[in-house]
Length: 375
Ligand code: GLU
Image 1 (tube, helix red, strand yellow):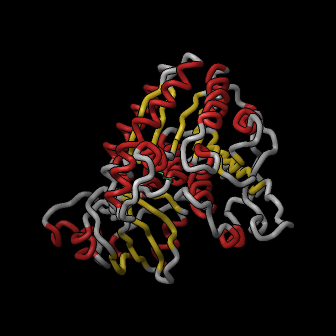
Image 2: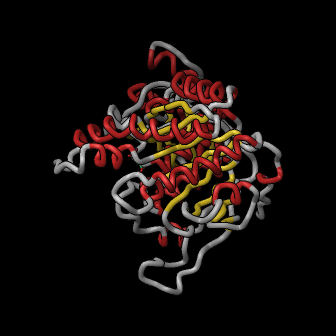
């Protein structure tokens, strides 16, 4: 299937720009104001042209380190959380000042995976971001590092930016980094490395996943997290571009459709809003089903308890779980109607036995087809 990228043809785009630490510091150990002012100028211009621009910005930890004059600290999470707590307001200060030059107001939005996982959190975050855009404000999003423990955090801002793109139905996600884009080999060791300018197949080639090893020195994300982000965002109907942050007018040129960096075309149809929500669910539970149930799901049926073989992990009713067929391949993700203990009790039973086994009934499906996204 060939896909066409028409995102730049629309008049007003909803654009998520992700700036990594290496871009914001321009490879130094502190924020580079000249780099930031250049990027802010570009985003402000696009905003002025009627595009909606959201920024996912890293750099809180690096800024905290700079503010505290590079203290010697243990490598543990609390030290990083402390640095983020110091750095985040300074970072916002700078953005507030720089966007202010162009007459724009910024808003700080700190998220964790948890906020996007529950249905309520999802709707709240979405509504807030859309309300900010409605006021012409530039939302600046980061992970809420000071409270984000291992279990609830996204962990890297590439994936966070994809979750945000999904949350607000972005047309375009631009991931700026210190490399030209996705390369055929590692440019630091191979002078013949070439840029891959277009990914237009619905599935990202496994070879590309392999090539995406490595990463830059001070950011969290490498190319792997960028590919993960691209994969998720394009499934939500966004075009994704990975490009080098110090290329002249890079954001503006990418938005105009110029061939810069690596562009991933959206996977053809935008997933409807409810399905987006399901894909952003970070639940780690897994339902293993038999071949027959797997085929039925592919034909558009719901998942019934009769096909359920095994229940893995821990989850509550309404959480997102992965559905895999016996051979282990994940075929979908969905919102599960019954909590983990209940699912265990229901393995293999008929739908009309649910009530007698549990003493209550939330519906005859383990996952209703409307709440299932096939991958
Ligand atoms: N949230 C982290 C920060 O602001 C960065 C995470 C990332 O770069 O992916 O410092």
